[in-house]
Length: 201
Image (cartoon, rainbow, N blue to C red):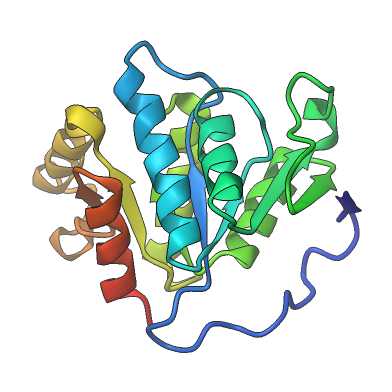
């Protein structure tokens, strides 16, 4: 376990070269959802990243979708880094079997460090927290603060209402048409990862 309270701005090792993705941050729910295919998509995502030689960065929990993606990556021999705030460290939340567990002081530091550690972002179904994390990364991409692609894994159309809202925001003049694609979507983990790999760099 690592304490990262002081050095969030430091370099985290060699950067990925253009077109190369060494690590992916996955945002997803701490609940499993009511349909088994949500958790199965998380497991497929974790396994796929590990089999592709891509490290997983995520929120550090061991329950729900978060636990499923981490456990699947670990079982497939992948490297998994969890980033968790101190107030979520109680045993029933923090995953104790990760390659690396980093403890930070705040939710903001968590997002910043996950973003620093990742070359791209995948989003599985989740709730308020998942969308909050996702849209901060999309906003940073919109503002040019990073150039890391963000893709939704749209399991059984879970994100369809969100995608319709983006089109509505464009039609209403709140999002520029050229920025409507900043949050991309594919129906399966395989297609979403392929899109990230094609877009990175």
